[in-house]
Length: 503
Ligand code: AHR
Image (cartoon, rainbow, N blue to C red; front, side, top):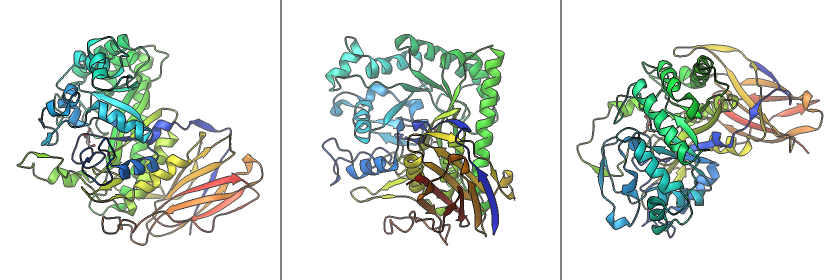
């Protein structure tokens, strides 16, 4: 059996767990909004047309903040189409996803949904086809209390109180040639800085996110962030990161090591942002908003022909996830948590139907995909501080990401309850790994209070409409603790969470 070891100490703290790490994303794309969160004719729809089964699952998932309304969609979106009487709202082409946007749901409806789901909104403005004025307009409509043209329009539309959105994304993926209104780093940096300055004149303490690279393989990766931040450093708070992972050509070993790339991505952008800060002689630090991440079988989407018809809420990238995908998602959360000193917001893309933990059928049921489980457990268990977690582990060679650790983990410690929680993956495809966890620095009295395991003999098993509970979490049996030293056996290709408590 493989052997690994980790030693934890309550004073070796990375940073507090940021609740915003457990964000998600609702884009007007495919069936995320229409027949996802919103389906007025559905038997479980509430008085506002929102599916209560989806709301319950979003709460169970533990989502804290939701990015809205896009994504690529936002780069051609006119926010004002989605407010006011529904019968007056225009139907528009959405060029990003070759579909028809009915505008039945706009910011006021989404704010109603967000209040029911108990989530914060992270709002993205259109800097693709639009600019400073439209960003100011949507801000005035959404956040200005009263007494101006647009705030009074909001009140007349039924939202008497401002929506109070704090976190604003300055456009989406504008480094990508696929983006409507794609820009050079120079053009985008100037526009982001000008928009940020204007928004801050309207409301000083907004938290503003400049677009970083769409992924770490982009031709301008690093250079894009550097140029953008040279223009916008003092007026923004975050730079964004986006990354999607998939298994290519049966190379499960590389896929299971996807978090190695996420670590590299985060470390590179921290270094780039800090280098710009040093150049500008700034005392300020820019944080990272990893506001799109997930497993996405993007190669299948890239190979698909552009549809001939223009449809409302077509089925787009409705990936069905398996056990290996869930192990990777759990591992990506481990990576995000270990970078909690700089990654203080993150959004899994997306929430419902579109590469999502929650699936629905129009008029039918909603169910949990495999990736739902590690997300929900991590969101529920990660409390207090993230601890420095260095695992002594065997490594293995991967085609895509070089030498990778077999066992990867992160731990949190909640000083209020004394709980220590370990989140851990075994990436080995053939063997279990015995992990020894030295908890002696926490004093005596800790015992295993709970354990959750994602694994299966068939790593490609998943949940479907007809078999919605094929895969779930089970107990990780056999975990022991003696004199502060815990021992757990991690099955091959598995994700686990183990909670140690004082009884
Ligand atoms: O989440 C799907 C798409 O991926 C988003 O619209 C875009 O921002 C990214 O490329």
